[in-house]
Image (cartoon, rainbow, N blue to C red):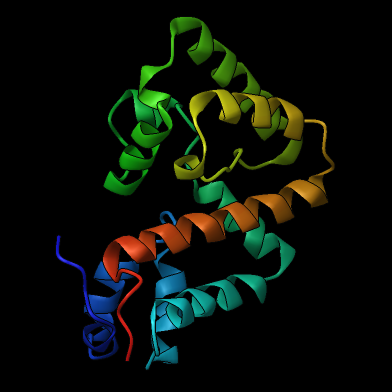
Length: 175
């Protein structure tokens, strides 16, 4: 896929915008639908800022709803090739597709504990981590309070969003 210019982004129809950016926040095209109205964007940073502002203005329940849309890391969807192409690429970059059987069992157990405790899946920017750091992070973050994890999860979603936007627009595209 060739990178889109910010001018091309700004001239996209609503439908094209949703088709292009609807998964920069996993399974939440509503975010892209809301951000479309903020055009024109001066660069990828202003585009990312619009996504972040939309997420930040959501209620706690809305933010947790976004977190609940995300798949478990190395979970059922990953094992059955059911992840989005973006998530698949991110899992691979972190080495989650090379988990040993013991690591898979540990990840599954920790994911279940996490979801039971917080009500949403563990979220970490896989492209900025490797499988060992993800497992350690999951263990450590299980010790946190719910409010802390909701905030941390949303900040991780924003990191994922930024990297996905850079995959689509690139960092050098300016108005």
